Length: 61
Image 1 (cartoon, rainbow, N blue to C red):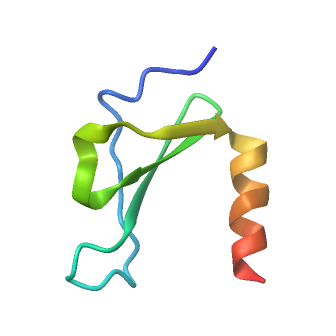
Image 2: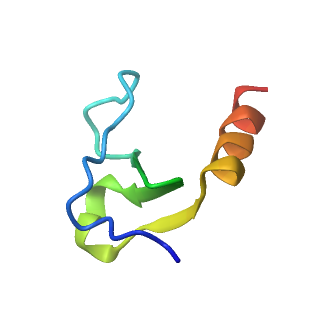
Image 3: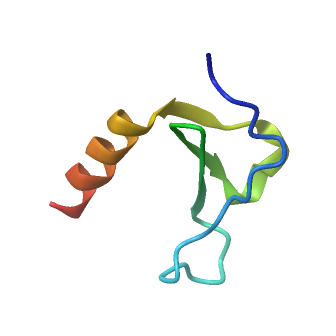
């Protein structure tokens, strides 16, 4: 079951530019979540932490 992310602390990257074109991430109870900085009320996508870590590793190249 996916945890409740309503009180999660979503964070942006330190590399984020001040133009609003980024995403925010949060981690709760074994899950990672991503949401759009420009549309925070639009919800988020949550996946198991292991899958989220694999996704992040794939981005690092």
